[in-house]
Length: 509
Image (cartoon, one colour):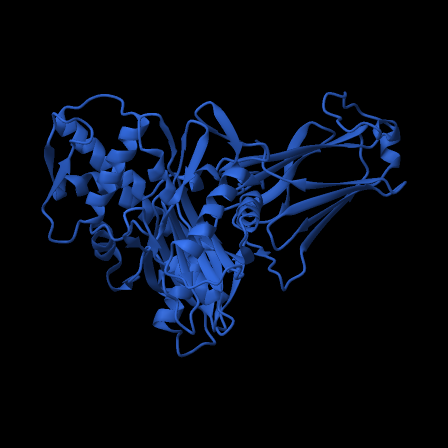
């Protein structure tokens, strides 16, 4: 069975490949109803963790600790990251693995799929376009440990672009590139991307992401307005926040263009309260600054197009994401971009459907992953008087897939210290001086012994780094390999005597 799985902030959506069709998989909830998603929800009660629909088994009491958006935690995880649930901790990788195991079992026993026991689940998985190699590695590793056979990893805008192309077709003149803007508003993240489409080849050429922003923020706005009108001014408990935000999301998703008032029921929060009324106009006025923020990010992607390209080269803006149907969003977009707007008929499932199409052996879709950040190392210059950033892998390069050879980058030089200290960094952009100027994320620090007398030591941290005349007699080679799983590995070798060490690079905790 071939599947496309979109691991979302609040909902995980699965689409299947079925003889040229790509149906969204339905899951049976605890109340017996079927719904077209698996809840991305983790909770802990006493010593036990609950995942997805099983969270309801926890009893939803005040002693339940929620991790409502597991995907968001990947934004900050490093190699030693621990996720704290109450006073206990679990590694991010183990937590995701257990969540995906629960999803795996639900596909077999609680879904609309007809699976035979032990049937292999060939899976295409999506990730945000700005995920770095470590985030991609953790995602693949957790899926595979859970039992899925991950055959491909694809960024979310490319998957949505494939669904668009499948639904609307290609330009008749396939010799030219067709630029498509993906406007993807999910629950926990906004992603604006430009995809170049030629024949059946899809390539992300520009991307802007607003992390920690999405439909959840509109839910919070509506809840805050309701609390203000009710006069309920206090800190909500974990359970109260979960229940009220769920109520807020359901109310938001029920809005249609003719809705005038929102009745917010607060009795689950306080039995002495009933409901408050909020006009849709009031709510939308609070939402407009957030919508404008997404439009600004979308405009920035156009600025990053190849020289000579602009909005006139864009055929459409494809609006996807589970939070995009909020009526103010397409309405506001149309006032600025008019006939360019196309809405996916399945906004919450567009990415999953695109993944299923992409992994269908009968389809001819091809795609290129583009690295969205610079990855490099800090180096000394001018005899140590200055520190500069040396990009090892540049933003915009094509990430290798399974059919391509890994990317390789080499550096050689004569050291001046007894220990080579490498401090790795990922940055979203570079300034005019070639130094990082945007968002920066520190990665591993590595200490390599140039002095042969230090090579018996496993840990060189804390050993004094000092200039050494003998160090210049050695020649150091750095060999970086970037593979199809998004893993970056470096082999440091002393070419004088053949001594070498290999490290797999990760984000710092």
